[in-house]
Length: 360
Image 1: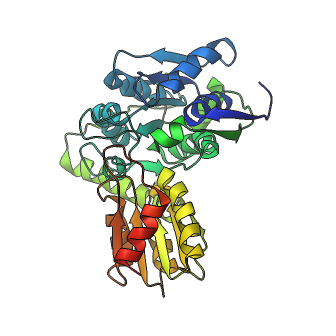
Image 2: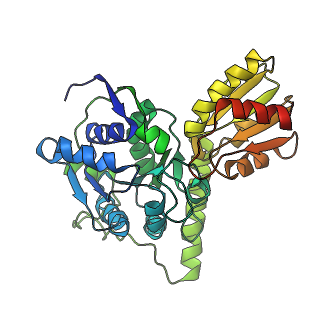
């Protein structure tokens, strides 16, 4: 593989290429539309022959996330990918990883639901991702790419954040970004970490006890409530650090805007065109795109929204991120929602029409 190359590929394919290039140790997954190209691309590239990376199709999504738990518990860069129903099956394992503070990366290429739903794109897993879909008080770091380039860029970022905070990190994409083809600059190749590097960087890892330390035990189980409370307080402090240091967002044409469209992922791509159309019609609109869905850029949105006339949240669901936007704005100006359901992707003109109907 070249150090850097520009090529045309799907978002799903970019995930696979980027994972190999960023030194991933193992992939465990199970095919499901619309993300199956990830495992197909990994199988075609055969990284076990070049970098030594393991690529394994598990018997189920439940098996996949537990394999990530085990591999990441040994300090390895492990990840899994799936789509909405498969991610739902992984929630127990993700909660276990959060409770045991095991880093790992989960990619969700969302499709419509609930249940088996449809294979068409959706953004209806926002609550599941940002609220912690399993049990207990925990959060998963959530990155929302809006391009094939960001699909590639966010893989290494997700691993870095996961290991920095010893916390599961999710790339929350959707069928639009996963299936669309764009030019992408693939990240430079970096080698997988050696066992010595893992030992140094991950003193918590279960890589075999040495005489100079006590055994490392990774578990989310603790039967003494006073000890479990201390562990929970430690995790809450970690989450506060993440909220203080890892917020990411993008703002376009918000300085002179009267109205702000708030969207993430593929909906933000459509929102860019909606802003362009609105301005052609004399409506000063801007776009605010959260890149981290958790931690949500609440303070940044609140600051940008000062002096505006209203906010329209456009997302491909029945209204989920809009709740975080309303919490951020705290009733200081009108916040309206527009979304399409069942795998229908909205048109920019629809967004502009709703903006005029509800706010202008």
